[in-house]
Image (cartoon, rainbow, N blue to C red):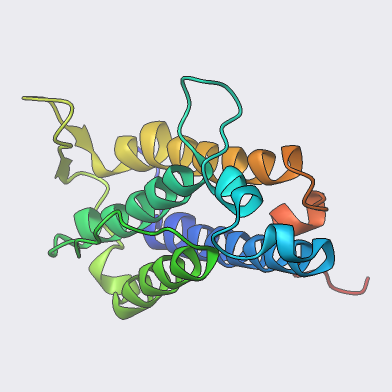
Length: 180
């Protein structure tokens, strides 16, 4: 198997996506300020946004963000083979969701690349795949990254569906473009 740097393909892109998600939540708050009192924190409109779903059997915006954060911190913990911090799923405001994202990024930044690099062959088990495991490489490429970005994309789509002015650059974030 070709050697992969699992740190570089997980932590930086997930951190960037979480930062973009936090910036999207800033845009949701800016949208609320423009819309006025009917969009204030705790209002019916803000509650509707936070609990909105694309379709009845998908998670709400709040849960999409919680799961994206759980994916990121869980991946870092599992790959580094350290304890994964536990966050209560009790966020009810945009500010609380932004704090969860911030705590997730803080945990990710506490792990050094050397703690993850070379972990392609470790056994990674998840509680909902009883008695089964992935290799570290399979976990990252077959499950983690597709699942993480599914939840980020769904959160983005829920916000767009609710009138938050977002575009592809909000999702992708800044690019490291260089002059030719």
